[in-house]
Length: 301
Image 1: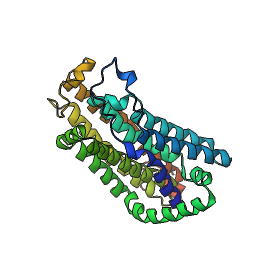
Image 2 (image 1 turned 90 degrees about the vertical axis):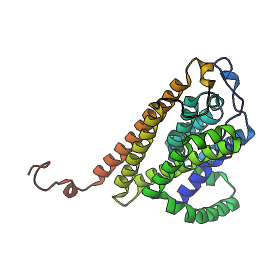
Image 3 (image 1 turned 135 degrees about the vertical axis):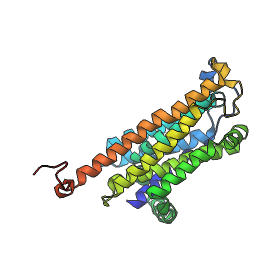
Image 4 (image 1 turned 90 degrees about the horizontal axis):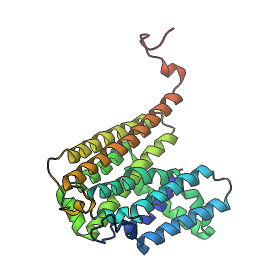
């Protein structure tokens, strides 16, 4: 099980070599459909991930189709964030940039991990390479395992989100392509760790794993919502987009307000939904005796 999570994280990391913008300059409404990011550093790893996963699913009929649906949805979202014009639009609109961040941190990682790619990928590989990958996964697990606790995973993810949205760091990422890649890579990596922790709690035998992960989700909901509010209600533009949003007919401040709402609302629903699901799972696993509340406040009899 642990090796499976490690390999799943490894496959999901294939596209991280190109987590940057296309660098195509300002993109207006008339140019948006011509601004696809056809970067080999994006397309080749994604195509390799699709091919390995599809080959493994075809070879082993015992893998459930629901896995493939989740993995396909996650890869489609990565394509939305890294290939579709949303990537190039992030050079012009802070709100588009923020939407890309939400794809990389909140929505694509859990879907990729729900696809549980370790099994299909191992089946797709030659037998000798499978053994090599299993050995490598055991070694990598020693480094990843301490990072998958609810406190550690949520703090690492939160630190990445807050640090990169500091105006100095964000503006540096806008100005330099390699800094931009580092920004997006850290979002995606910490997002994978965070959601791997959440999903592992679903399958954990420890009954307290689910409420602990739900607490981490609540913490992330609160601090990311606070950051979204600070961005949305700031009285003036915080980042170095200048007059770029006017190419879309909106002011820089309006664009920033939209970006804050993008961080605040869609991500908030995702965290709330996951937290409620974990708590429902925890309650469902409790024995009748554990459901009893002393004093009769919530229990008759």
